[in-house]
Length: 124
Image 1 (cartoon, rainbow, N blue to C red):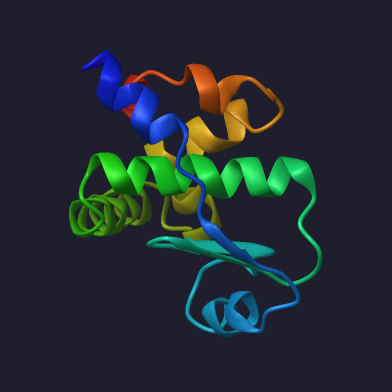
Image 2: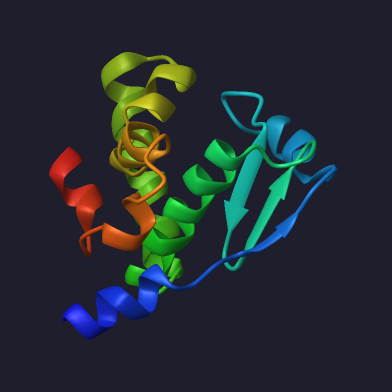
């Protein structure tokens, strides 16, 4: 498992700056995103601040762990659970375990290198 963790930790998404994708996602999302991670791509409205790129790369690593599609399914289910509980889309977004992990660790420049596999499960 350590070899898998190291392999994932070295993966970097393809990052696109000055993208319209976050604005488009904002039309259907409960928040107006500054950046969006989907599969191997990360899109940002402006140039990437290091913290934002790290946050979105955490999501990229979560997606790799769950073979992408299972991450998207779980993300949606966690969001629906939050909506039922909070009745507020922004609060549901912030309570999603995938977001909790990313927000808690996006300030740590060493986190991606040392991140345990499935670290998001600690936020369930």
